[in-house]
Image (cartoon, rainbow, N blue to C red):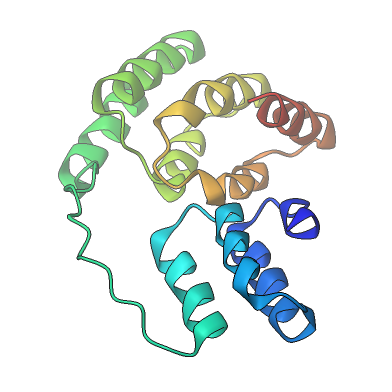
Length: 161
């Protein structure tokens, strides 16, 4: 279990504890390894591998996904493009991000591409992170930067989150 906790990705933790099944001498207590996992489907996968049976859990009720529609996204980009000054563009982008709250990395990158200056993109990249619904893909935002110093600063910012 300690070895599995070294990994930040839960799927990697699952792989480690599943590999350990063949090497553990006390399978009765090995079920406790499930506590290194938080996702119920992954816990079920581990228990299935441990006991060789199908673990059934009640269905999870999924809340509607928070999204920004294509129409809203196009309107946001249009509003940003209409502005003449970079500082005003940044303010409009921040207002839109804050109002809609649920942007994909792809949408965020599209907004950044409306800006010329690296410092504006970096400012927005830091601001937009909390409004991103697929944070596991946020590393892709680095592609909008020209300078490695901007990428490094964003990465430092993200590590502090």
